[in-house]
Length: 142
Image (cartoon, rainbow, N blue to C red):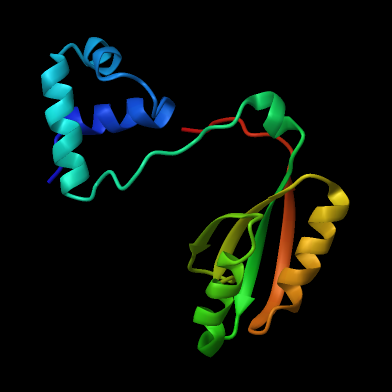
């Protein structure tokens, strides 16, 4: 079970994974050593598996992002996941319930690159159907 204080710490790290323990402690109203021990415990338990990079809005503005919904042949599902993992433009892959089996979030430097990527995904062995939506803006990201 994860404590509410740990949820708050994780929320702060999602906003800025590079925040110092002193800054995190100040925002949480606890000591730096308390934050450090919570971080160590969360890492040891595998709750925090690593830290990431958030890109500057100016850089991300130049990228074309899309969500691609996939219907996949059930017996080819693992192969499709492996093939998508090999595509550096794939940011996230979700298994979902409903009319589609997976949602893939991709990013490309241009529309023509995105077009080419979508063709490659649609042609993958095991992909039966795709439906793509270009992301125009992100209103909330945590």
